[in-house]
Image (tube, rainbow, N blue to C red; front, side):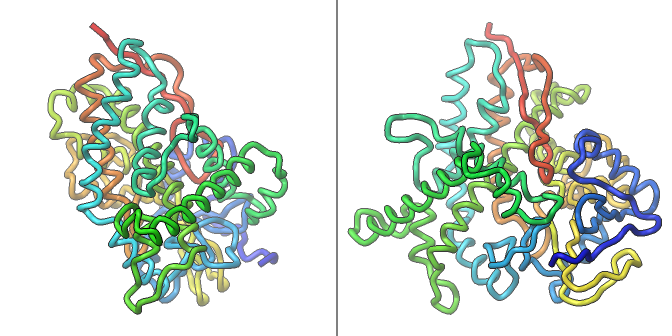
Length: 426
C-alpha cells in the first residue's frame, strides 16, 4: 500500500486535513467546496480523497458491494480486522446482532437514574464555586461514567485515584493518529516512543481491559456474576446467529472501541451544545424557557458541529467519484461535517436555527448512515437530554467566563478543549 493511489484533480480543493488553517476554520473550507459546486477534495498531505456532498456520501454508504470498511476508518490500512466500523458483512452482521442485545433501549433507559444522580452530584460539588471548566468537569466525565457503567468496572483505582486523566490521554493519543499523513498509525505511535505519556496511557488502558475481561470470566465461572451483569459478561455469553461466540481479542477490541467512540464523541457533543446555546443570540434563554426545544438544540448542534470530521471507506473495484477514476482500495474520507453543511439539504446551513424541522435536521450524518450507523446514537442523545435538563435549571444566568479553547490535537474530531463558564449562586 506504499505507492500513491491519488493525485490532485483539476477543479477539486486541495486540503491538508492536519494543517492549522484547516483545523482553525474548517467550516469555511466546506462552505467554499459547496459554494464552488465541487464538494470533493484531494488531501495535500495524505494519500486520499474526500467527499462533502450529502447525496454522494449517502450513495457511497448504500454501495455495500463496492465501498468497504475492512481497511478501517482511519487513513492507514488495517492489516487485521477490527470491530464494527472496521469490518463488513457478514462479520459486521454477526457483531451487530450481538451488540444489539447489549445496546438495547431497555439497557439505555435503565441507566437514566444513575446518569441523573451523577449529574446532580457533579453540580453539587461545584455549585457554590460559581464557576468551572464545564468541559473537564462534566462533558468529559459524564460519558466516561456511562460507558464504565455499561462495561462494568470503576473509573477509580482501588485507592480512589481517578483513572480519567490517563484514559483520556490514551484516547487522544490513539485517535490523534487517525489522519497521520504518512498513513501508518503504527509508525506514528512508534515515533512517539514507549515512554511517551500518551503511549503509556494507552498501554495502561489496554491492561485495564485485560484485567476486567479476566475478572468477568472468573466471576461468571464461579457464579458470582451472571450473563447480564455488564456488557463484557454479555459478550462472553451471547452467541451470534450461528452459535459462534466473540473471541477474546474481539471483546478487547469492543471495550476499546466503546470507550473511545462512546465517550470522546459524546464529550464533544455536550460541550458544543452549551457553547452554541451561550453564543447564539437568544438560544440559551429560549431553551431555558421551553425545555421542549432540547431535542432540536441537540440535533442542530450535531448537524452544525459534527463531533467527527469524517471516516474512511475503500473501494473493492475500480469506480468513479465526482468524475475521477479511483484505483482499487483507494482511501476516501466521507466528510460527515461537510455533508451536514450541504446547502442542497439544509437552507442557510451555516446558521444555528432552533426553528428547523426536527425530522429534517435528523438527516444529518453525524452518526453515519446505513449498515454502520452508530449503535450508540440513542444513548448519546439521552445523555445530551439529561445533561441539559440538569444544567439549565440549576445554573442560573449561565455564561462564558474566559477564553474557550478548541481541541486541535485530534484532527479527525472537532470540538472544545476548555469551556470556562460561570453562574449565579444566589
